[in-house]
Every structure is written in structure tokens, then in C-alpha cells.
Image (cartoon, rainbow, N blue to C red):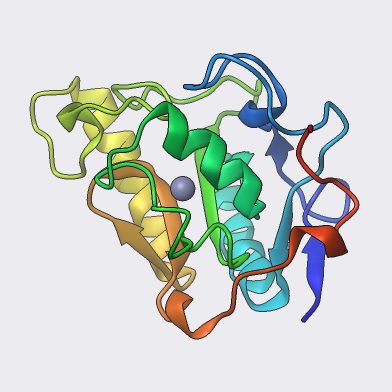
Length: 185
Ligand SMILES: [Zn+2]
């Protein structure tokens, strides 16, 4: 098993790991401030394809989370034990397997595109296929959906920001102790 650091400049994208800040649904950071985003090699390759598809459109990807240690999954689950939006840490989710990414699109100035809700907004408005979010948000969600799907990712119906490899369950949970960025104690 090898995880790839998907930080720039190796990957032409923006990174804002929300779980390294208090601005997440638990209200406090559970990653270290210097945490970096990692994916398994197959997922990193799919992410590169998405970067290449977004670039001619004038967009870049902005990563909110990628590989997530199981301890981080517990932090989210304890704050919001709703399986519609958070994978049960006992089974582990695709983030814990290193094959899922949470992201949005930014324009040439680095501004996030309008997506109708914020990241991790656990409401039905976060679902794909909503026609009751602003038209710009509908269009931007579909652009992200098209880029990611064409690059080989599977979407998740409940969260416009979450993508994972189609065969996520084929991958084992990644032991966070092997990584340089364990969550905060
Ligand atoms: Zn996710």
C-alpha cells in the first residue's frame, strides 16, 4: 500500500483541509495544522485526470479532505452519527481506505464556485439533482460531476462534494499510524 501526497506543486490544485481548522461540523480541529492530503495511487491518478479536464475550462480543484484516519471518522461520527452523511467508523468508509475525496471547483482567481450549500452541509439541499438551489449552483455541480465522472470517479447522491473510486470496497482501511499526519490527540 502506498499513499501519494496530492499537495501542490506536484498536483495543480488548491488545498484547504477543513478538519485541520475549527470550521468543520465538529467545531474543532482534529487534524494537525500541518496535515497534508493523501490518496492511494489509483485515486491520485484519477484525480490527475480530473485536474487535466478542469484546466481547459478555467477551473482548478480545491480539496477539503482526502484520506481520513479512522480516528478522524470517529470525531465526525460522534458529532453527527447520521449514516446519510457520515460513514460509521466501525465499518470504515471510502475516506478511511484512501480512495475518496471531498472537493469543489475554484475559478482563475481562486474563488470557490457557487454550489448552493457549503461543504458538509448535512441537509437535503446537498443532494445531487436538486433544482431548488440557484441555477448557477445547479450548473456548477453538474460541471464538477461531469469532470469527476469522466475522470473515473463515482459520485455520492447525498453530497455534491464527495467522490470515490467505483471499487472503493476493494481497498482495505489504511492504518493511520503509517502516516506522517495523525489526527490531534
Ligand atoms: Zn467525503
